[in-house]
Amino acid sequence: MESKKIKEMKDDVILDIKVNKSFYLMSKAALMTILMDIKDDSEKDFEKFIKSVVSKEYKDMSDKEKAFYTLTLLVGEIEKQAIEKNAYDEKEIDISKLKQDVKKSNED
Image 1 (cartoon, helix red, strand yellow):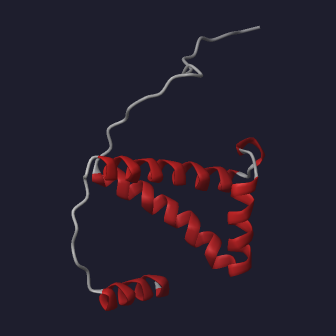
Image 2: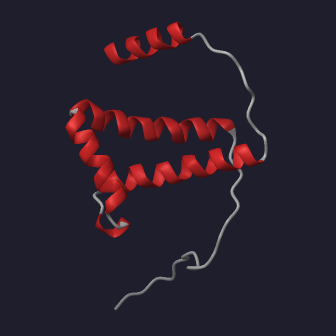
């Protein structure tokens, strides 16, 4: 039998990873892509998907459920740490423009 050495993280390791805004936005966009893909199928499928993710163990999830769950945890942790470090700027946005932009992006 041919063997090869590989590196694998230890089971009990916890890493601190530095994340910039660009990586956060990319992670959030990936999460939203999965979310919108499911939501496009139908509202019923969307609710079923969310209930499925929260009720299953990770090992029993489909690949799409695993990706959604993993990105949700990642984005949530980034946001939690940003709140803890007071790393948010508050700004006002034009809600009507935001609605138009969302509507336009859904038409594309």
